[in-house]
Image 1 (cartoon, rainbow, N blue to C red):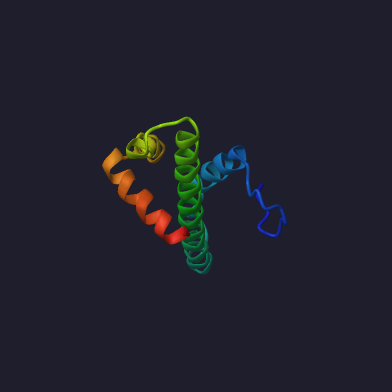
Image 2: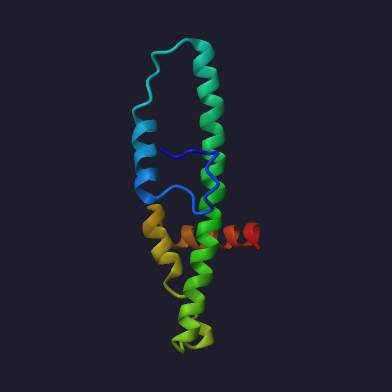
Length: 110
């Protein structure tokens, strides 16, 4: 499983992320209260780290898609079309909401 001390810059693979989601989904609540509080704290840290990683990944994807479209000769006024739809599918939300998130992610990252 993912080791936070790992020096790899690539981070966890898709299969490791999927395994983490599965492990978290099955996280037992049958522990004492001190353990529950500690788990809540670490789950909050995981949420924050995941949100930051998602914003960076979103900004990188949007930039990559725009670069590919420009290289393919897409007219400047149309560059970026379809990016929000793809991200909306990945995030399981509307393209309009994904477009807002993409703009926000780009502001945060750049």
